[in-house]
Image 1 (cartoon, one colour):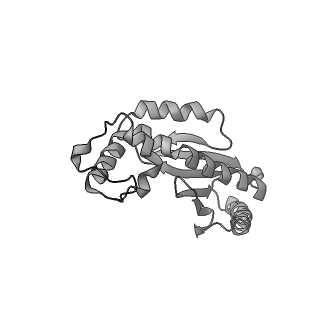
Image 2 (tube, one colour; image 1 turned 90 degrees about the vertical axis):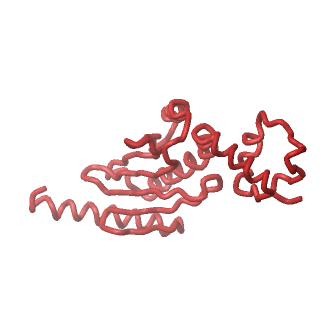
Image 3 (cartoon, one colour; image 1 turned 60 degrees about the vertical axis):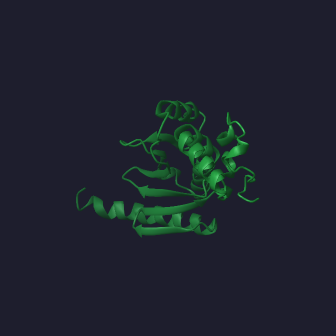
Length: 190
């Protein structure tokens, strides 16, 4: 970028920052603004309790990127297939993976498309996709670990509260074992 181009770029960043700031404040979303053209937004969910979405003003577009899940322990290809089958029906963002296999939602908005309404729509899409698919992603990519953790907690009478969403999945195919000290209810109580 030449010195002559820098003021125009700075004006674009300032204008988009103003739109982003107003949109996030109006939506009452927790956010950080660590540098001009860079934002981190906390999107509160129900299944995935929080998705942090990065917004970065680039030369021609606003980049949208949200980490959703670390690389799966198992069934990588099955998880990739599941995610790719949804990409064609998604709005504004798509599933992607980085070089180590971590799962993200990524997208780009041309500068002219960055309006409060469109930004709200894209952030809503990020939240919806991350939240709606999170448990299925965990079941596919971390099923063995979830079942193992479930068994460990049941055996010791520990709380299963944060695993409740996986109750049917974790217990699928499990035979009832009365001789293992059973008697615990799914919430860890007696």
